[in-house]
Length: 379
Ligand SMILES: Cc1ncc(COP(=O)(O)O)c(C=O)c1O
Image (tube, rainbow, N blue to C red; front, side, top):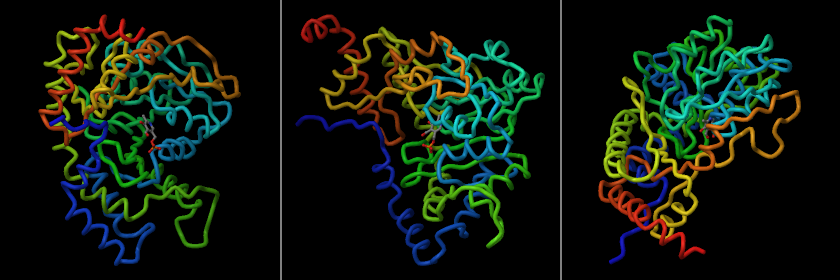
């Protein structure tokens, strides 16, 4: 019997594993009649703040709005520059731009693929107001170095933690060395609801208060408004996230186990494998290999029923339409550009079985061993 397909995401399996608890939580919300800014959101925010070890957490409709509302609440806008990485999902830079500020990209570190902290100082100008590191693929950026630079130049630090809930740095926690942490709960994230969701975690109560206002049409009290947005996290999502938040650490452990299997199985394969600096706890939102022939490898895996995806094949500064006006500086970012041309994310989710991981490894090794032959066949 042919083996079944190995998809890229495991959220339906995850739902089946938790079905009774999730169905119960959803039905409770439906019966309660409180769907917006209700008790489930309040409880989730308390539980999330406790998990993140921050004073406050504010539930929002997406990770994108989490970034945007933090930037607006910090007063960033036209004329301001925000240093970030181009090796990330588009929303990181998009939110800076939507706030009216200008993203300034710094190249990524070839080992961690996170922002190269040795290149940040050179990008600082009198207009720089903030640094936005992204904890790419689930590995925290070097927050100690970033916080030191920010302190020396009086800059805000906002962590894009859309991919890294539960990760830790070497003797620092996410949220400890920044003004705010932005999270995404879109279904495929390590903590995902059934659709879109996000949050900001912060130790700054004033900032949290401002974001609570901005998410709700500038209002904390019925009928009293200043300008804001409709960016709330629904109670249905909050109830589901409460069920799942309890499992995030267990899921991160399983992700690390799978990463170890890939590390061991692919150690001799002709490709760069992910790694974490000593003392860091990676949560492997994605397991990303690099190989200059990745398109062929991706096609080969697909022919074997295995879905691998690219994160991110076009760097943001190379997206059509960049620099989006407002004087953004175009620079070449060779490490990021090389990654864009060679990254491939293998299936990675807690519900993968060891046998499925072995099958992915076998096929990657098979492709590697017969690469020349496959290439000639394709000509
Ligand atoms: C690094 C990064 N930043 C921001 C976002 C935006 O989050 P959302 O899709 O919830 O708006 C995402 C994910 O989608 C992401 O991966």
